[in-house]
Length: 462
Ligand code: UGA
Image (cartoon, protein in one colour):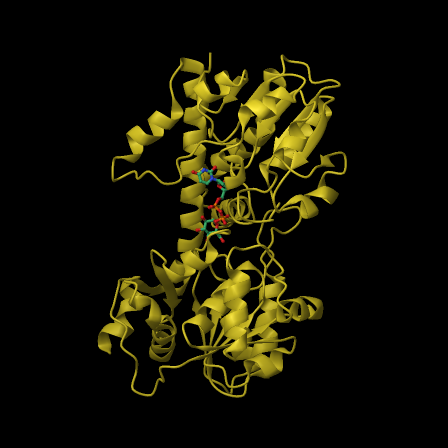
């Protein structure tokens, strides 16, 4: 037990034995049914815990209960359905009812970039904290799962102390590292679970029990200080964004000097110290996390008078890159896009999601329209979300329809369905046989055989 108390201060790994008074089966409340909340809630229920998911949006709750998921995530509907049917996963709009008797209440609400200054908007987190604390009827652990800047846990704790000095409420940071599109697998087989506490034995014991099923998968449960845990999340996302941005700049250099970025990535990635993941050059990172979190980390650095200059540069380089992809397409068209039709394959920021937040396609469409092109697009899941964001774009039913009469075909997002297209059939229906492959899916030989003039990322194609 001494080890458990010291470990958070020491910031190291430690075994997770329960305190004597802690039960094995946990009652968990999840506030927020967005990506992180719904996936985490369903996975905790699948481990056998009792989970109540709370969301203010009655329409959303009703939809989930009737089997319609608010997000597109492979396998989520089955996971929610089976656990709801087994009675382990329930839903409510009522925070007070949701937190009753809970061992742990997770806050998994959104932390969007605050308009204008890039700081994370924490108003939803603090509002949730207030509601939870006011509704509590017994000691509990409040766990922040939303990505929140350093010090947010301190503020939640202050709120708890102020509103309920009568109750022992522990505040823990437990950042989530799942990726959209692979969320269930990532949650159930994580590389690590990070739990930040202020040393409370009860909080450590409760969190150990909640994650005990994962220790069977050998996932290290890492206890650390609360501020450290908050920073780990940002540091991880910023590092990954940096890795992507690094290889994207190498790709530009490869194009200039006549080298091959995929070979450069492989050549450096085989060094275990570097690792081969997140070295795919492309149109720049997007999504709901990297753009927002890198910006928030930059702001934190500025606030503490300790600028994180590498991350500042990553943010700038990535923003410029998305627009540069538009120019790359115009160049592939011979330098003039006026009156030309460009067909985009894929609009979402990555495959297996309908998420359009900060997707490179948005800047690409803007650049093409500014250059006078007409844009046609197909995306397997993202068109409903994308359509209002890009009103000038004509959405069509599949890749072949998109290519009909187009002057250029651009692969923007690497959905599986785009990986083995019949290039000859596509080329035959186009006005000009121009293929811009922003994800380096198609080998030069295959494109050439179909008659395409191919432009890739990070290599010169003759
Ligand atoms: C990211 C992290 O990978 C998760 O670990 C983290 O939990 C999540 O943010 C979060 O903070 O919630 P996600 O945004 O879902 O997950 O997507 P990623 O798979 O990381 O992709 C992000 C962007 O990077 C995409 O636009 C993708 O196309 C791009 N990317 C990724 C590359 O351009 N090259 C790569 O090699 C990898």
